[in-house]
Image (cartoon, rainbow, N blue to C red; front, side, top):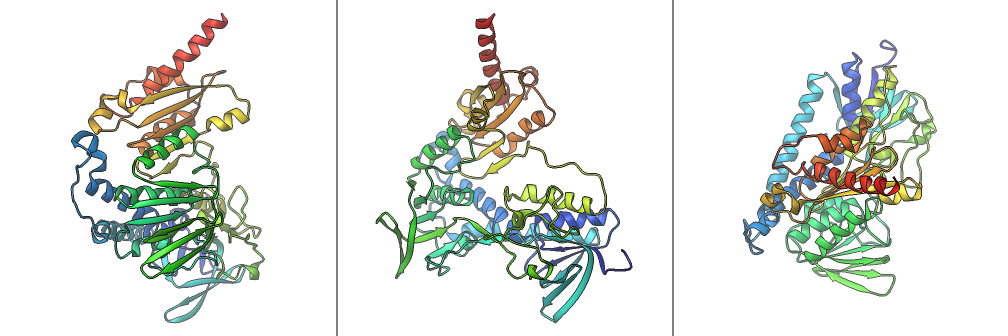
Length: 468
C-alpha cells in the first residue's frame, strides 16, 4: 500500500474528528494528510464550540451574573458591554487553538493540503486550491467535513438582522431584542448567553419542550432560570417567514403571531457538508440532510472510505468526533479497538450548565427498569454557598435491583466537569455504595455525589425494611 498510493490515509476536513484520525494514523507509522478548504479546526474551533464557549465565559465574567447572589442583583464588572468586548477574548482563544492544532499536526508529520476536495474515484481525491487543481491518492479515506447550518428558503438571511448560528460572531452590536428559532443545544446556549447580556430573548420551538433528550426535571430548572432572565418561550409554534424592515426583523408564525426584534438567529438543524464531495462518483449515498450512514466501525458502503464526526449525525459532539476519528483510523489499519460505550457524557453550555451521562428517568420508565432517585442541591453544600450557586443540583439514578448507577444528571456551576466522576463510576460498573463510602475534598461541588448517594441509599434501605 505504501508504494501504490500517495498516502496511507487521507482525511477530508480539519475538524476534531479529522485531526484525530490523521494523528492516530501517523502514530501507527502511516503516511497521513488532511485536506482542508478553510481554517484548521473546522466549525468546532472557528464558528461553533470554541467561540461560543469563550463568549460564554466572557459574558459570565463581564456581567457578574455568577456573583450576584453574593454581591447583589446590580453587580456588574462592566456596565456597557460591546461586541468588541466579547470578540476580543474569543479571537485570542480561536487563534491559540488553531496554533495548537497546527503544532500537533506538524509534530506528527501530518501533511496539510489546502483546498476543496472531491472524489474522482474510490482512491483518488481532486483538490482545488489557489494554485489550481491537483490529484492525490490514498489507501484509506476519512470524510470529516462536518456540517453547516440549515437555511430554509422562507427565511431571508442577510448576515446582519437575520443570521444563522455560524454568523452570530458577525453581529455589529448586541441586540436589544433577539428571536431564537429552535430550542436545541445551539439555540438554547445562545439564548442564555444573550439573556445574560440583558437582551430580551424569545425562543420559538415547534416541539412541546426544549432539549427533549435531557432529564425533564433538569430542563424545567433551566427553563425557570431562563425565564428569570426574561426569556420568553413559544412552544408548538412554526416560523412561516422572517422579514427584514429597515433595522428590524419580523418573525411570522404559522399561528398568526408576529414577533418584532432587532435580530433573528435561526438554529433549527444543520446539514452535512457533503454537497461538493461528488459522492455519486463513488456511490456513497447521503440522506436528505447531507449525512452519511456508517457501520459500527465508521465505514461507509465503500469499505476503505470512512466517515466520522457531525457528518454522520448524532451525537455530533466534538468529544465524540475525536474518538470516532481515532477508532476509524485504528480499524483501517487493523489495530484493536473497543467501541464507544453508552457512558458517553453530554455537556450543554447554557447559563447555567447542563450535563448528564447514562439514562434518563423517562428511558428507565419506558424500559420498565426499577430505579430510585438521589438528589443533592448546591444550596446544601458549603462550596455552593461560596460559589453563590443556590439553584444547582445533582441527580443520581440507581438500580433498585443491584444498586448500579444508571444515570447522573447535573444542573449548575461546573456541571460539565463534575459529570465525569459519574462517568468513571458507571464505566466501571460501579454501584452507589462506592459513592457513599468515598471521601471527597471539602468544600467541593463534587461532594454532591456523596450527598445524593446517601439520599438514594436511605430510600433503598427504607424500601428493603418495609419488605422484610
